[in-house]
Amino acid sequence: MNFNLTSKLPHVGTTIFTKMTMLANEQQALNLSQGFPDFETDPKLVQLVSKAMEQGHNQYAPMIGAQALRDTIAKKYREVYDVAVDATAELTVTSGGTQAIFTAIATVVRPQDEVIIFEPAYDCYAPTIELFGGKVVPVRLLAPDFQIDWDYVATLINSKTRLIIINNPNNPTGKVLGREELIKLGDLLASTTALLLSDEVYEHIVFDGVSPQSVLEIPTLRERSFVIASFGKLLHTTGWKIGYCIAPPQLTQEFRKVHQFNVFSVNTPMQFAIAAYLEDISYVKGLSDFFERKRNLLKDGLRGSRFKILPCEGTYFLNIDYSAISQEKEFEFACSLTRQHKIATIPLSAFYKEATNQQVLRVCFAKKDETLLKAVEILNKV
Image (tube, rainbow, N blue to C red; front, top):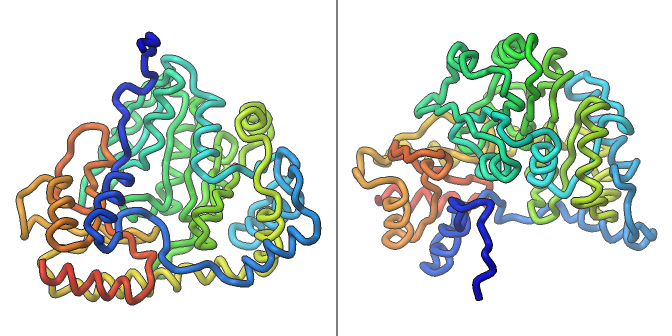
């Protein structure tokens, strides 16, 4: 039957993550493509969820989030960043980071607005912008260092620029924007009406002595920013889909107008469990060491391979260059690797709007040590 339906996202198909996971399952391959751990979260956290249910926290939470969790988040920002966040006027609990990103874009982007994104970019940014009639203005960054030319970015900002989106630390590049670069961005935006969306879901997974950075620490950015974060990456609970958005009161008020008709409230017992679990904030401070050891296990294991290891300053993804092995395009090589060597990765080209082949694959190292050792064994034979 013809419903005369015109797609709002005509160029969007099945995501690369679904494709590679399906291929991995079909080939019974080691799956290092999607960004989720193959180890369990702390049993204590699971017990706290059960306790919250037993205590009767089973009905709707407040639309803006359970007070206990919002207070815990505000405490974290005081202790980690020395930043005061108003848990009532500035903070909204969301159904994961992606929902918060979607809601923030829906809140401010109107038809013909321009939104600057930095590629390679997380795959939800561009489709969401287009869904609300915005125009994606990509800044293409290239391996191996993915450096941003801020003078070039300045030429893109105009009266139509509604929003700039950054992801820090960045998935998929592993690059971390330091304080100096954030200040530079703040200076660029100071005389404009452009807003900023800062995706900080990997904020506590940074390596080699680097400190976490948040745009909330930069006054010229804080006054115009939606800061998005998530507990999925921090607590090894990607399936729980609980995140939050911090923004100035005026932006938060508008954000909640969309949020209340999109999700309204988020899983109640898990909010209380996370609040109780993070009473001791030292947990998040230990995440860098935990994942740095896993990064090094994979990186050191591949030193003798034919892959070239790209820098990884944060997140739990490592990029590997296969140009010494094959001249195949990234998607084809990733598929060949899965079929012939039984290991699944993600082609970096999937994170660009236009075809960009750099012969680089993204590998997730949020895995058990035995999984990473098996990956090393396989990749060293390629």
